[in-house]
Length: 144
Image 1 (tube, rainbow, N blue to C red):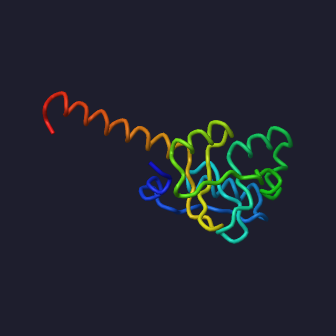
Image 2: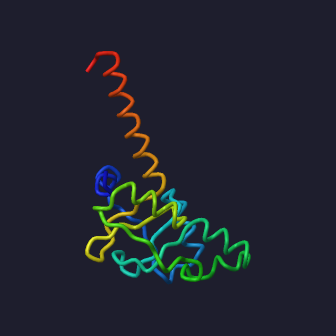
């Protein structure tokens, strides 16, 4: 299974914020879309960074509520791991585990075309296991 298969089901919509957005705006975007991270992008197609709920929590713990007025670039991760649609799901799981990231943007020819979260990976794996279980049950019981 490849990332393109996940995106085919999930869709390629990616929520972004501009680098000059403040953390307060970021929080409203995360809440509005019920997501855990957004890509920081000047134009909606490039990846200038990524910022997550965890980044906000860490910044609040370190600097207090004043961080809410700071630009997202004060707390974002600038060095972002990315994938291509051809990346195998096993490689995504390895990258997420080794790099300790939960969201990875998907790029094609330098343009953002999707994002994959740990939840997407887990959902896909559960669906695969359910399909295998069903096939084995049908095989054992003689129904096809």
